[in-house]
Length: 265
Ligand SMILES: C[S@@+](CC[C@H](N)C(=O)[O-])C[C@H]1O[C@@H](n2cnc3c(N)ncnc32)[C@H](O)[C@@H]1O
Image 1 (cartoon, rainbow, N blue to C red):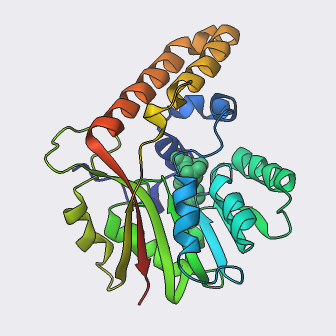
Image 2: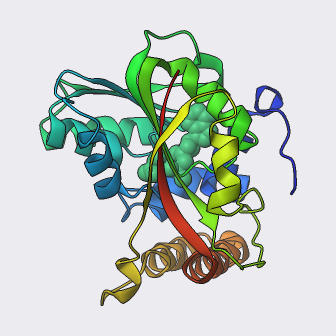
């Protein structure tokens, strides 16, 4: 397993680039490259149904940590009627999320803050639920990540983590997924702080069986247009698209998408 540096020591740019699996030089183009995607890895329907299953969520307060363009936060506010606070380090996405919340008619109960979830941990009123979707090991190993996430949640509240784990028997590795282990190996890491694992839900891989363009396809179309206008970036853009395609295949063949729910002790 490769160990990422202490998240307190990392720059904002490196955390964003790592989370988006993007060369830092491409970051200023991320809004355009990812313009056709709302969710940036989160399984939004599964997160919404999971949070709905936790009980009366209408009065719940939820934080979405690393909220990206706001897809999960907005869906939670719209579907469950609860108050959601998204925190996101990449400022352009904060603006996109605010506009999307406005367009969805939920800006009265869904707000977005530009900030670093490592720095802000422990500074906000504890929420009922913290969602952490598709950030992988950006904050460090899973035990360290859970230690940060639980500082956002009241005792008895829930932590909802959406990430990948390795399929049993698979030994294939892929850059950025070195931290992933099997379901059985993940469980003790999740509960290292004494929290209770109350649910473990597997994503269904509907997208690969659907007709129409895949996520790498829509990214590739945006990248081609960007490369046409910025020929000096063509090589980096091509590499990004190739990586996205390879990652998509790796996820499909070797990984399971999972939503875990912890009840904080
Ligand atoms: C792959 S995206 C997932 C976004 C969202 N959860 C979703 O699934 O649509 C990861 C996001 O985490 C953000 N991020 C990375 N490090 C962060 C930090 N320390 N604090 C807040 N956001 C962070 C990145 O900027 C990026 O938008």
